[in-house]
Image 1 (tube, rainbow, N blue to C red):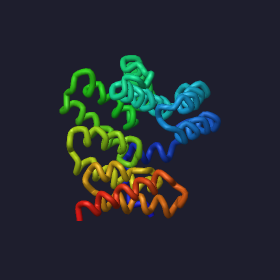
Image 2: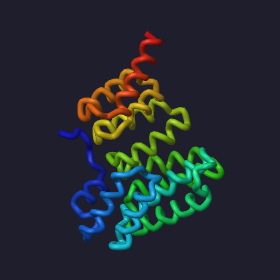
Image 3: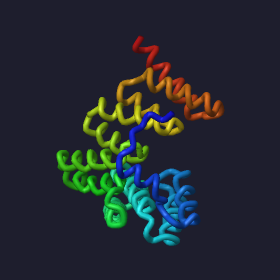
Image 4: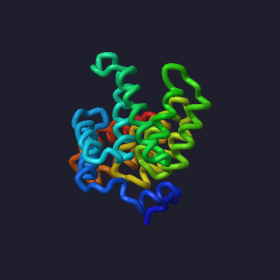
Amino acid sequence: ALDAELSPAERRRLEELPTESPAAYAQFLRALEHDLTAETTLRHLDQAIEIDPRFGEAYATRAVSHLARAWLALNEPDSGFDLQTEFEVAHHDAERALALDPQLGLGHLVRATRHAWPRLDVDKLNLGIEQALELSPNHSLVLNLAAGFYLAQLRTDDAHALHQRIQMIDPNRPIGEFLAICGDVDGAIHHEQQRLQWNPSDIAARSHLVLLETIRGRTD
């Protein structure tokens, strides 16, 4: 059984459908099958919102998609994405999501990134992250994004704890790289071994496992 305590907001969302439209929900689920920055992801989210304009979770997820594009533009200027545009669209979608459902942790997390760029305010950023985690302590995307921000602040223990929670909630999500960055090489190796048990043809997991075992051999 899953050892995860639901927040009141999460319990409410389990009791209530995120949308009354099966067609909108189908488009939303298809979006989750692709990389966040992919055009296919945005196309499915656009269609979900077009079908049901009150689908708050779809707005919040689309906000994260645009936020991911913004960070890509910040770190890779040749990505083809415009940092300012993607950042503004992300926050527009986040505010729309929160107007529809003020308890959406994902929306609060995107809103908090206003304190990450262009001017960093670590205290306000972390307050927003903590609010998102309080509202959605079992949302793997919220946990993953929060862990990334903690890692950027060199809060490796906090990031590691969140990634361990992700592994408990969503064991298929690849987090070996993050565990290794946090210094937990043994945990990363165990995670990649599990991935190979589920899918022996997972080339990425096999390659990462070889690299991790090499690193561990050098430190033994």
